[in-house]
Amino acid sequence: MDQAEATEKIVTALKKKKGKTKFYFNDLAKILGEKPRVAKKLINKMIEDEVLEYWSSGSTSLYGLKGTGKQAEAEHEE
Amino acid sequence: MAKHETPLLDQLETGPWPSFVTDIKREAESRAKNERNIEYQIPQDCCDDLLGVLELSFKHGRTHWKHGGIVGVFGYGGGVIGRYCDQPEMFPGVAHFHTMRVSQPAGKFYTTKYLEEICDLWERRGSGLTNMHGSTGDIIFLGTTTPQLEEVFWELGHNLNQDLGGSGSNLRTPSDCIGQARCEWSCFDTQDICHDLTNEYQDELHRPAFPYKFKFKFDGCPNCCVASIARADLAFVGTWRDDIKIDQEAVQGYVNGEFPPNGGSHAGRDWGPFDIQKEVIDLCPTGCMRYEDGKLEINTPECYRCMHCINVMPRALRIGDDRGCSIFAGAKAPILDGAQMGSLIVPFIKVEAPYDEIKETVIEPIWDWWMEEGKNRERLGELMKRQGFQKLLEVTGFKPDPRMVQEPRTNPYIFWKEDEVPGGFDRDINEFRKYHQR
Ligand code: SF4
Ligand code: SF4
Image 1 (cartoon, each protein chain N blue to C red):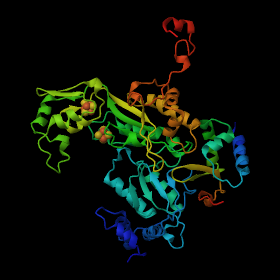
Image 2 (image 1 turned 45 degrees about the horizontal axis):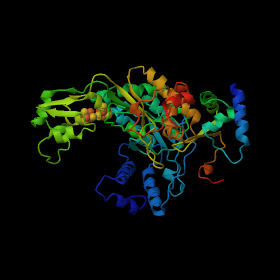
Image 3 (image 1 turned 45 degrees about the vertical axis):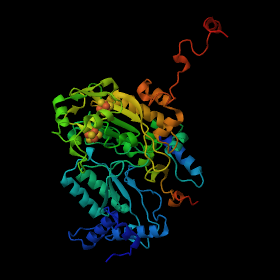
Image 4 (image 1 turned 180 degrees about the horizontal axis):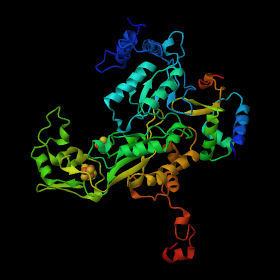
């Protein structure tokens, strides 16, 4: 899968998820249908291109589309 | 005069131990005076507001910090932990108060110059409060604002030759004991392998793609000064295969009271004259030592290198010469949901640069398995429990070994598989009946 196709897949899939803005790495790898190591390369590039951004609680890391992550969600407030 | 009244915190200072409250107050005072004319880049009274919000939390019995956040330095998914206060009007000095994790030098060796430099940097661009060190080993910088993150990162990288550590679902900053630099018991160069793996696995350290955190820790011997066996997903514990070296003359020296046992520690009380039988031989967990006619003997195949006798008589007993490490997988020390000790996966392996065997036969196959099979927020130790130790052996290709079993009839997770048994599981009943009556 090339980068453009991967980015397209992720953006479309994440936009569809209503009310959810933060995703585990595994969720993204599943969307891409790739093994973790391959998925990681593609996802890193999406971070670099500022399509995705990281969210961290300190112990866990999540990913979201840049600019959509609301802090409120972390506190389980829809 | 303190900015906020803090009667509940003040109480914490009345106990017999040093108090973090006193430390924060001291820093608040020093910032207020600013005798060195520092150009503070974050609110000068942040430490006062930190005390204020903590007092409020005690009063309410609940935290006033929000959970996590979207902050970081560009390209890094770890090393910065977003902390936002949920009462920013009352405590503007800590409205954002992010934590930065800074990779500690291997073995935590510092020069005073370097310590001063990192403290100066943090005084200027952060709260001045540090935690030396976090449980992973990092230097923890406590509290700064979002715009300062990139600035601190730039100065660390360019002026102090230092990097951020790991946080989140990353490889965490590898940590090691002081090792061969100062300790004669170190069976391998803990600092070298710690540094090597830190550099090798930069991508794993900074770009989170694991199901959860992952820790490496390196202890030069089974004394485990960095507690690797209790806390690291992969613990490397130094060991040796040959005999403990015995200097019989020095043994006599201990027996005659010439040398203080235990290197002179526990000396706060008079324990009476040293008794080698009671203090060493009888305490050997495997019962493999004997002291007769003034001669000490150790039955090496039975010794499991617990370090007890060496710790008591360091001048007389020395670690063997055929050195390497044992590797344990799956330890964790979480606050919730049960701590777990590491399970032995590699009984003995040589630890030699460039460490390819360790990387290729242990670390990477384990990561591949955990990355594919681990559930979100599942530590390696939990995956091992869920899928079984045998699965771990399968993915790494290590053979089951009696040393992986704690005692007979425990760890019943190593089973024969059909293709390992000659003839499989089907048997010829007629052949069987030749030997066994109905
Ligand atoms: S773990 Fe062993 S080798 Fe390392 S510092 Fe402690 S006693 Fe020395
Ligand atoms: S290291 Fe431990 S097991 Fe080995 S001889 Fe000494 S006390 Fe016994």
